[in-house]
Image 1: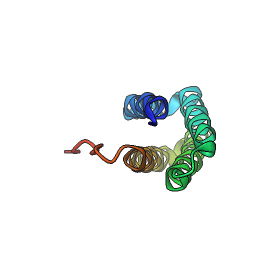
Image 2: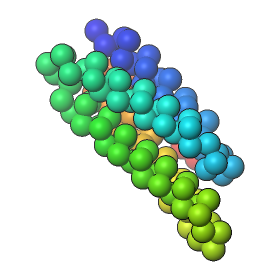
Image 3: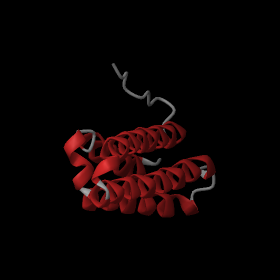
Image 4: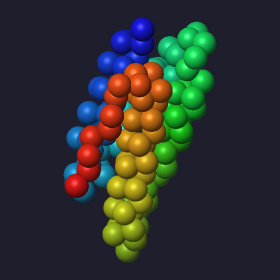
Length: 117
């Protein structure tokens, strides 16, 4: 039913998982690409009647990714707050992954998010 959207969500989740390294705070282009993928997926769900919650989760994920980009830019600007910027960046990435998994679960009820250590 939503297989193409689920494929896009898998791609976006893999991109977010790849950005989990501390050094990835410098890779803001990949964040923007993932945000665009999520926006396109939400736009594709606009014509599907039962996907309102999934679209809201995807919109929240895009907003959180924009906040992660802001943390990455703050990391570049001010070296005194870099530890805080890393923490904010990691927090926002985790929140975005959570929103993606919730949207994925709305589209595919059999989906269960992976266990985190």
